Image 1 (cartoon, rainbow, N blue to C red):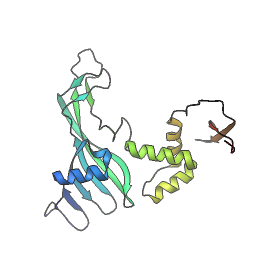
Image 2: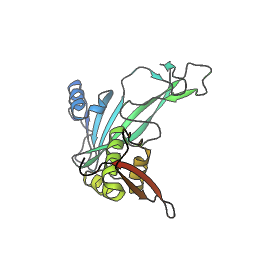
Image 3: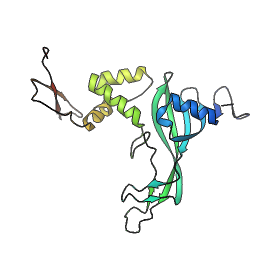
Image 4: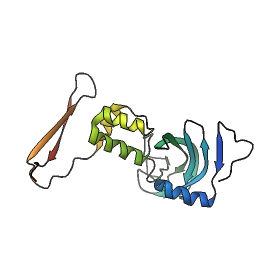
Length: 202
């Protein structure tokens, strides 16, 4: 991945990614294996990865019809897990396809990078899972402090919302001890969630 030439500077370094660099990135960032990484930018306080989807077509989220007719495109920024204590931002070059189903209410739709992006989310799928795991173990404020030490900035309320979005754990037998965790997302409101646990002797 040689520097891009005259455009590089000590404050902002840009590297074009070769085929060998693609294979190396797939090892370091497995969730980027389905993307075509075009370049990597070092902006001192963050690392920016510019990438696009490899697939030639995408399926409409409304009707499921596959389409390869590109209507347009735009760039979308998704925050990823930190690398070396610095935030990693993925700039996705997203294509908008035209749905081939005339009965579908969605005339056009944007593609999603599988395993990286989901609709209406500004964080990557692995980062969302990591923050939800922090919230389950440490709750809001402690999870925020831990994420901050890893280079990920997040608000405690966001961590709690990610925890609330998780499905309830499966219960295979009657729990012997029931734990209740209550917290407030806003003043005057209280939310409780129960987690079945076992007794110390089991």
